[in-house]
Length: 257
Image (cartoon, one colour):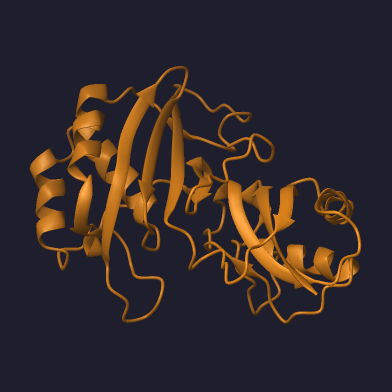
């Protein structure tokens, strides 16, 4: 029996989220575990670096599992993909180091949120990006992203994934890039539930004049003052990478988000 780690990618549109759900709805975890059982896996549950929400995509999610496999890691990747649907794939697999855990060994996570400006619906883009009907102020978006850099209590913008857990997080990277689409990249040690989507919604509100940068700063200063506006939709969010000691799980294969 050996420990393995795999980088996976998925289009989250038709999944109820990563985590297995009691009511039997289609989840990334459940589909992965079914594929693993097809190659002899017998654990009760696989481990993952994080739990993406319903509709959120990933190209750098990481899972860990133990398996008695007599062939190489590349063969294991191919074997698993043979049992997976079109909207979920294993990008790569390797043996895991002793004591490694996909969640607890992670140092940082990187998410990207994508949006585009169009006056009418675009069915091809809107599966993976938020459509804005008007262009927001790019300079204000960049200034708003800077507000979230550093160590803050983000309790106003999300809930701890574990009941009673703390809501302080350190954001190492928070920046917008503008080309054919607007792309927000954020990197932190960990995230709160729906934190990124609420931050994107808050930045857009500031960039369209619905609130000021001082409102964002006030919510950071007083986490009990909940950000009540609607979060950005899940379709634009993608887990890009999980970063460990000296490695980055970014993968070019997988869901286009």
